Image (tube, rainbow, N blue to C red; front, side, top):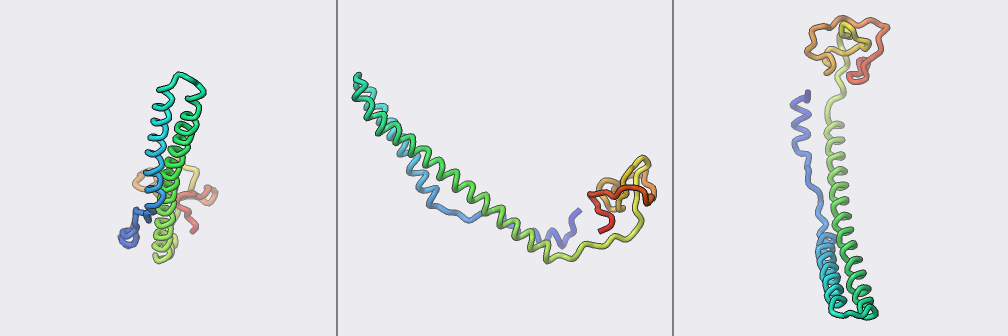
Length: 152
């Protein structure tokens, strides 16, 4: 359950990232150029029956074209990874700032609870026991719930 103040602070958290057009532009030029070179290499090699005449087409068109397609795809991938990293960093900074600006955790006040067959002690607002009817006061020999952290 989030508080209205916390929701208000997080309302301005952005989900976009800074755009870097150069890798995308270069990748959008290199990948199609590579495909064109592969096609031209195939076209040249397909018009001659001699293998010694097909090899230059394979090297200049096929391998160079393949290299350009891979490089263009790599630039797209690098741009995408950079955008994801920028987004994660921006969101982390905004959430950290919102959490630091918020109030300190509310100290626990009240008795610890457990379920009828339970082996853990819970705060009354713990999501594990919230809304349950079979609750009883916890004894001191029970382990503490790691979700609600009753002693913090």
